[in-house]
Length: 523
Image (cartoon, rainbow, N blue to C red):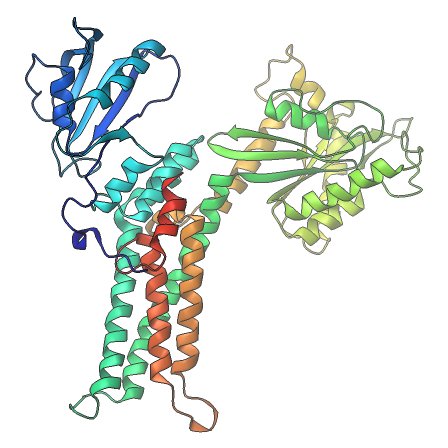
């Protein structure tokens, strides 16, 4: 099935029905907004406000809303704010009426039930299907699918960085870029097909090899841009889905205490008993605009480890918890390796950091922070040499050479309200380093900021486009033994690539477009 651009659709085909819906959140509120879109919008206004003229376009007016059929007159809302937007320059491309009514449940319900009883004239009045206002905006050329994707992300944004990424996608930069690539591919395909069909009848200045060479240069540039879009999508996906952080370390070093302090609630049970955390405890939070997911994992300890408090044999449940901790580390985006200062019972101190945890962080090849808890039990003069020695050990571990110096912290001091220091436990230094990692993981150069708006749907279609373009490149190159390129097959690869780009924006001929629209607009 082929779908053509809105400009090619039959006039009035998409506007037979007038639709309405509650556009503000359901439930009791001060104000509720009801939107009405379609050819009967003016008639609905006349039925609800029979004695008042239509407000001037885009000018708010206070009106009394009456039930359209009940006599004597039943007042639905004595002071509603009404706005009328004449099409086609509206959000949906149609006549649009907005009723800002009092947000009481009964008032909203009475107005919604009265709207379909209005004198519609032509067509019918019905409640909008999910996403139908946006769907009409697309069909009437007010939005393309990249902007629809961005609108969905804007409505779902919970953090500042998610909002910024969504706004980047709402710009015309992405859609204009995709359309430019598609047009270039269509022109290139047209030249190749003209060469196929008419080369014997007309004079062509270029030979097949020269023509394919010129198209190959264009395709190479598009492939380079697709790789940049893929990188932007990966970074934008971290902002939308959240950055996963795994807390790793041996038992009793304070992983649960640290996570509870960072997230601001008791998410994990805190105990001095080894193996208290047997399963993964995950908590999401907004950390200065970044959505994060912290995972408190089971403490690592190997068989036969002889440390204070760790002489209890590892049971089956704790062993499973350790296995899950390893798995969580491998799937995380950032790792915090936590150790702790411990006393030998006399005047000596050491830092307990599990070697397997460090190896796992190195194998994971993800940004890693090392923190040392319980700094409050030792003087700074004794602590600093221990931290320096540990840092030297870490830098000598393959895969961790660039790890920043360990951060001494104290969960005990961080919870002590009597301490007036700006950062009594050193936790702020830890979160500052986390935020710096977040910025490095999600930032793009200034001229490529819009690429953060590339959604997962767009990335998958770009990947499909890339595969077809790579197939074209393979076909366009002369084969072994001087075998000439198959220009018919090369042209087909360009067609498939252009179709993938058309699915991103919804412009041009889009195969299976109804399936695409159904998934997108129901969001």
